[in-house]
Image 1 (tube, rainbow, N blue to C red):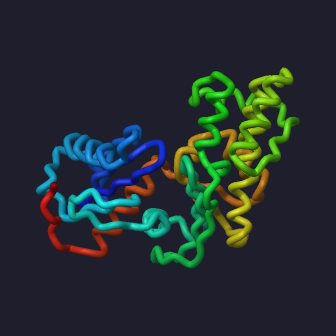
Image 2 (cartoon, one colour):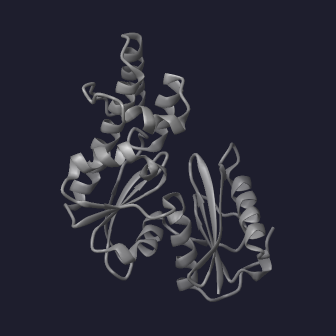
Length: 261
């Protein structure tokens, strides 16, 4: 059975093609001003890499706010996470997206027991990191390297993205080193994300997914916040939601897809 999953994220749109339990292709593109078009383009690219046509798909799962008109099954992010990560339970899943930080407690079958997440402010998401990198005039991929050289002596206390940005700008104007500010950003993100883990109760292990899961300094700071938990990062953390969407539509329906627009 061939299925595909699409995750329409705030910064990046991801697509994954799955044949039974084997991943055939993964693709990621910038979401841009028209997320619907980015999702369709990302799916086309993933299908091309997998040497699969749209007509070959048995089901398509979508995580997003609006339909693509491709006969897809809408899947909640929490459900996708629980299905993709069920082999890692017992424990929690902490998804670290651009705008959302989401904690999910699931059972061994992928059933959702409890969830917690930030609501309107992106100060607990990767967008905060992107904004700080822009303010510091450094490439996003350099933040991890710089933060590992930071002292950890500068706190960022603001809970709102706007105020946190103003606080960082003040630090820059005051002559603080970029390395120290980057470290402060990592510590602040870890502190805010760990609050969702505590909200659901300390577990034996935490699975990290999303873009921030690739940041080693963030992982170190998160360990400091919720020690002595075991942190597990899947091989391709930014595609976990896509995988879960592909699994969800496979398990929920065996009917053929509707016609594309």
